[in-house]
Every structure is written in structure tokens, then in C-alpha cells.
Picture 1 (cartoon, rainbow, N blue to C red):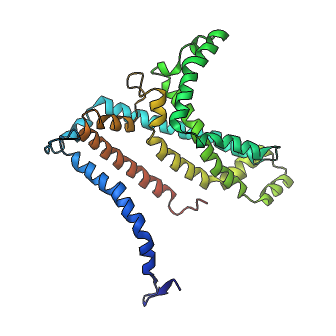
Picture 2: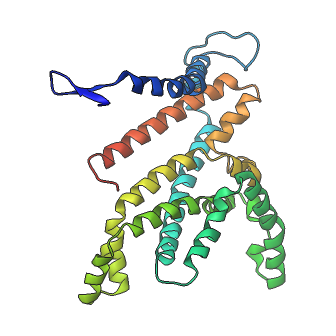
Picture 3: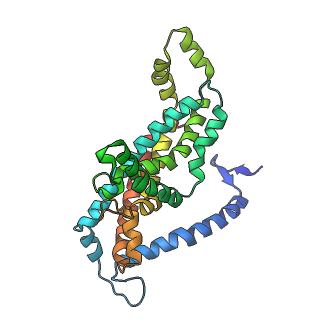
Length: 294
């Protein structure tokens, strides 16, 4: 017996379990918790990352809420995350439906579609940077399409579209695998019964498939949104936050502050961003609590 019953009917946890938990707990504390606490501490100072420092209370936090650059980074990050979540889930779901249907070479096609997931984000960004800056404008000039003759990355109003496209290109495979697992878990008898009742493929998709994989949709939306909030490498490789600061994410602002002399100020920014992420997580948990996601 690995666990034993106590007088109150509760099961007693064997001490060996705590021993197995200890290494992970120590590593998590040293790598995540301790640096996080130190960062929050310095957010109440005027530290530039090195040298002497002194406490300045809530000065950094007050300044953040009146900083238009910080507000712009939050608006871009959340807008970009929402748009990318929608694109990724729609594309991945449609691909999953196609790759689980009765088509030839579907196993090989699954392998092809998963390839972007194993390529470094910064490499993908540099490749697409060349395409957006050179290949597409050349194709636009040859085809006589005016709006395509200039790079999307140089347009402050359209650069975010290029970032969404590239981010989705890398993120779709992971989401696709989850949807494939969800679709394969749907009993085939359900579709056979629907065929007998005369339901069309479109009706089966919206009235059978979508409801039965709704739990997987929730998981993909949650995981995707959290990942896109921390977007950094692809944005750096594509626009480096430009043109100007049009595509600067919160993560970019924080990282640039670390080596730009705004250490304490950006630590305050990171603390607020952490609180926002926690609140979003709690909201998502409250919306999914009590539901069977798988």
C-alpha cells in the first residue's frame, strides 16, 4: 500500500512522495520564485541593475500608468494575442478535420504540417523578414499590385498582420496535434448514426464534432493566449518592435529596460504584467471549473 487510511477516512500520503517532489520544488524555487521575489523587491527602488540604489516607494508604478509607451505595448500585446488565438485555432481545427478524414497520404501530411513547430522562432522570423521585405514587394511590382510593393513590416498600421501570420505559422502545429487527438477520440458510431439520419457533413461538423471537442478548444485557447502574451523572439526577428514602437510587446519593453538603465522601472512593469496574467488565469479557471475538458 502506498497510501493508508486515517481515522477520519482520509488517505495518508507516504513520505516517499514528498521526497520525489523535493528536487522539483527546490529547482522551481531557485529558478522562478527567488528571482521573482527579488525582482518585485527592486521594483520599489531606483536601481539600474548594478551599483547603488535606494527605495522610492510606488514611484515606478505611478509612472507606469501615465506612460503612453507602456500603454501602447499592453494594447498591442493583448490585441495581437487575441487575433493570433483566433487565427491559430480556426486554421488548426480545419486542418485537423481534413487530416482525420479519409484522404490519402494523411500520415505524411501530418508530418509536414508539424515541421514548423520544431524550428526556432528567431530563424522563422528572419526567413519571413526576408520574404516580407524582398520577395513579396518584388512579386507585387511584377504583378502591378501597388499595396504589395512595399513591405508590410515598414507599415505601422499593417506590421502586426505580418507578426500574426508568422506566429500562427509556428503555433498551428502544436494546436493541430491537440485537435487531432480530440477528433480521434470521437466515437465513429456517432457519425454512422448521423449518416443514417441523413445529416450532411456540414451538419455533422457543427452539431457533432464541434460540441464534442469543445473541451479541446478551451485548452488550446488558454494555452495559446498565455504563450502569445509572452511573444518576443518572432517580433524581434521581424520588426524589433517597429516601425517606431508600433509592434513593441510588453515582454520586449521589459527586456530592453534591463539593459537600457530602466531595470527597476521595468521590474515594476513585469510585476504588473505578472498580476494581469494571474488574473487572466484565475478568470479562465473560473470559466472552466467543473467542466470536463477531455
